[in-house]
Amino acid sequence: MTRPPVWVCELAARFWAVAGDPPEFPRDLRDVLAFVAGVHLVDVPHLTLARAAGALARFGVPFDRTQPDRALAGCFCGHRGRGYILFDPLLSPAEVRFTVAHETAHWLRDYDAKRRKVAKRLGASALEVLDGTRPPTSDERFAGVLREVPVGPFAHVLDRDRTGRVCSEGARESEDAADRLAFELLAPFDALRPHLGNEVAALTSVFGLPEREAVRYAAALGR
Image (tube, rainbow, N blue to C red; front, side, top):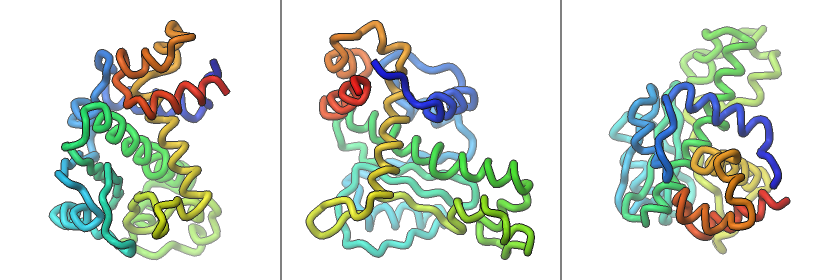
């Protein structure tokens, strides 16, 4: 079995340091996220892009929807330091479990970690630039770290073309990374290691992953 990348272990450890002791398996991060400051968990039955925009509008969060409306399992939006995780509660329990973990991973990797990097390098006041409340100073403008972080509201919805295919390699890379972190949050490597040789069965029965995701995770560990 191949150990997860260092960044996965670091972000998972940071999450539990903030969220508290991990719950028993199978883990449901909905119970955990209720105690994480700055993160809002929103269940939207029959979630679509249009319903996501409507739900976020109730929080005063802009959501620029340029794609045709379609069904979603979940999505993430970050606005002025707060994270909003939307999911469809009508999915199966295993799918809800993984969807919430996947969107939590987007918050940790694609939003919170980058904001913390900017604050560390340039100071907390630079977050005002990311939030779009003021323009960058000349020093901030020339700081390369700002180029790595989106300014203004950040929404993560997997872009697809009319045939349903992922639109860009960058989007696929982001999705794969979020999946990898979600796996570690729900079924950490050290807890899974005793099930070597029977990973898929353990991932579904012990850790509560959907079968499709369990098969993908087992394949990734084998590589």
